[in-house]
Length: 136
Ligand SMILES: [Zn+2]
Image 1 (cartoon, rainbow, N blue to C red):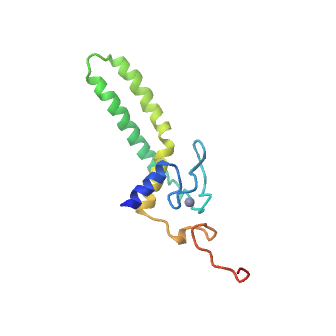
Image 2: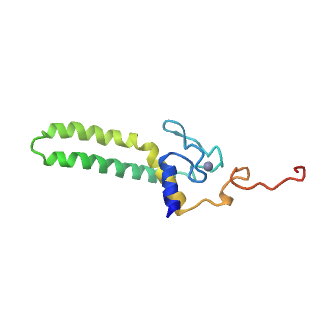
Image 3: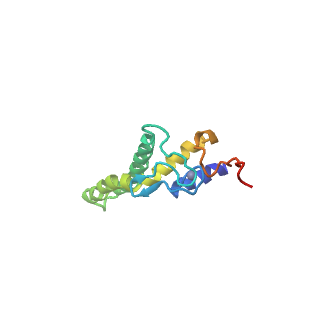
């Protein structure tokens, strides 16, 4: 269970789920192709982040609903006010949560389908490299 929380915290901190060192994003909304430390490829297959978009949409709409629904039942708050808060919230939250839902998705996938040494390139920093004959 500790591994789950470690992976979740790495996802929320936008770090590589394998090593926890490499950053997922090089700039806002642009992901690195692989971890700069262990070289784990962040996009494991075509359309890999479709599920993160679903997670993003669910979280965004749940938060927007949790804010707007109580306002709809309060007679002191006009419907127009609830709409003026709820509509921008529903539009902006998916943008605000974009990075972290990708990190959460990557961590969840790594928890359910862990990366093995065979999935990482040979030059990965977390795989012990065989010592060459020229080294002492
Ligand atoms: Zn890494």
